[in-house]
Amino acid sequence: MSETPYAKTLAALDALHVQDPRRVEVAGEAVPRELWHAGRMSAWLERLEAAPDELVRLAVRGQHLQRWQVPRSDYPEGRVGYLTWRRDQGRRAGATTAGLMREAGYGEQEAEAVARMIRKQGLGREPGTQAVEDCACLVFLENYFADFAKQIDHDHLIRIVQKTWQKMSPQAHELALGLPMSDEARGLVEEALAG
Image (cartoon, rainbow, N blue to C red; front, top):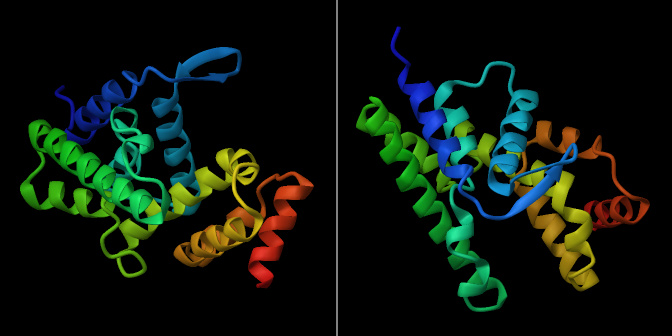
């Protein structure tokens, strides 16, 4: 029995994720950071949607594809540099994922739909794009927020939390509020939401 285009694409994505030289320790084992991140994205999607379709699953899995290859430090400091880096990363990950999909047997329309989700086009209007953004925000809040909060000025951090919250769906808000957080992190979120 031959593999489906979905299975082939998923395997190709994970083969690229495994190439990340950065490592994170999970249950006493060092795993490629990007593979771990992609797994967290997929896990959140399963909590957000009862039966996500395969295109959304691929977009979520490919959202951070090969980010280590173009580090944030290659771009200017500040908001404009960050937004440019993020846009370029989305374009790159979208194009690579779409290419893997075509090689696996998907049509152009399906490949481009996934690339649009990864580029975050249609945020707030397109369910697939919203799912990708919700998963990214939840992974950030769950795994990166506490350390990130120590590096950013308080007022700037409050604005970041507010902007992150605005991009999330009501269902993602509910899941985010149920995350375990330190008292300090929870206080920052509560302050941001009250503002």
